[in-house]
Amino acid sequence: MKSLLPYALAAAAVAGLATAASADMMSKLGAGEGQVDIVAWPGYIERGDSDKAYDWVTEFERKTSCKVNVKTANTSDEMVALMNEGGFDLVTASGDASLRLVAGKRVQQINTALIPSWKTVDERLQNAAWHTVDGKHFGVPYQWGPNLLMYNTNVFKDPPKSWSVVFEEQNLPDGKTNKGRVQAYDGPIYIADAALYLMKKKPELGIKDPYELNEDQYKAALEVLRGQRKIVGRYWHDANMQVDDFKNEGVVASSSWPFQVNLLAADPKKLPVASTIPDEGATGWADTTMMHSEAKHPNCAYLWMEHSLEPKLQGDLAAWFGSVPAVTAACKGNALLTDAGCDGNGAANFAKISFWRTPTAKCTSQKECVPYYRWVSDMIAVIGGR
Image (cartoon, rainbow, N blue to C red):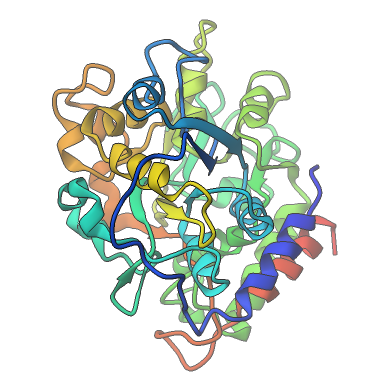
């Protein structure tokens, strides 16, 4: 299990969440500085090393003379910690990190007039709450998708209808217990998955938003996670490690990303894996490319943000990661994604997804909610068996 220190480091950025501030917004572009340093999710910035067909870096470097350097991060909290440390120009932040970065003054307002392709972004994402504060944009939408339930089709002949298969001890369709055969995501934001599950299982709790929980609702979600702790074989954060666990360690069900599902489906051994969104719905992520407030290579950063919206890149990335493009035009005419790819990756499920965002004490669904710093400390306790 990895160190939980990044959670504690990231939590420090939450304290100032109510007061958004930004660095001075750029008003014009100059010459590229020769490089751009990006913190990104695994599989988000590809240069053909894994598969020659998936390369959206080489051509960018040739055209702009901006060398792309990538630091991979496996959780949103790692991304926040890295941006707090500095030394990076951009980050592909999910909604549970983006507002913390704004509040912590780690990212700057984006001048969309300097990004010609901004107008091509899906209108549902252009003003999304996880990167837009007081009408100001703090990033460029990149990709989105659901947190799926991945399962072994030899164990589940039919797709599981409920997240209960990973939350509650039970015998699975093969007659064996799920104890030790399921996984859970190890980020504090996973508390929202338990809350989403409770919205249908215990409607009397009155949960309207899995990211806005009062004390009673929050305690109920923690109880679900403490019960789950007894059956979880491993908490996952490393996508490739989860793939190995499904291959070699007997894991048969877990929350996951389309990225892992695609990797397993493409395995020459034809591993028996599929995915579904259960009846309760799913949490999900809508990732935004955000620029550090003290970016050393701002011109190359802006050039990359414009490049990131290029339809071919958007489509190729969606095919590689199993995500949905932020530019809807990418859903047609892409050889790798195919015209059926966006539907296959869940484009029609937008309304079913509760997208990650940072929980705050001030909320809209009720008077007061449990803030994120509590989520951080309590998730550490849950994983530690307390």
